[in-house]
Image (cartoon, rainbow, N blue to C red; front, side, top):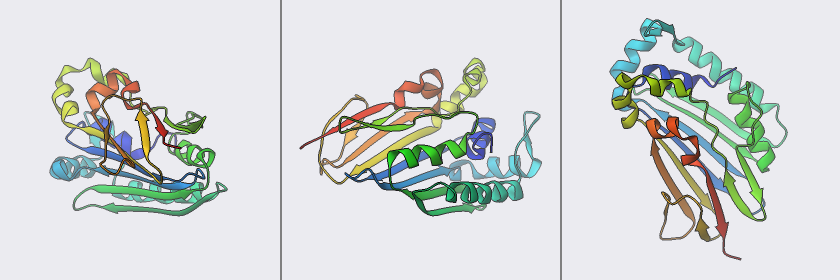
Length: 210
């Protein structure tokens, strides 16, 4: 897959949707990753677009294409050493799509995420001197921001990051983050329009108590 199909659909529909990235990360650098793309609040528009197989004259995957690409992701991700519990799901009533997997290291996590966008071999996450770092690299074409007609929809669409750890967080670099009362979960939410204009809004560096 040259580009992860879910984001491809999101960008073409530019309707109300939500992308949620969840990670449960352990001190030994292993963890569980989850990506949920939720079109339930605009399911009718999504259904129509998928049935027509195009938006604004641009082709998009139909239901069978989506199933096939998810299966392809599972197959390719399963070949990466250190990956386990790989699963995908789709619901063509609510139009919610999910990907889940476990990883044994940050390197494995990055390798699986790069399966989603083979045009780039990027470092999405890293561990630097004990800090958990997110380097935002969403494949979001900036030319969408040139179309003011899409701005209202993109302002309603969100990217959410929820990162949970097995030890207390001491500091977070991103000032827009919220920290849970337990001090173990970091929450960050931005709208797609702002992220398109500045991908670094989803960057983060998280430090922990000894």
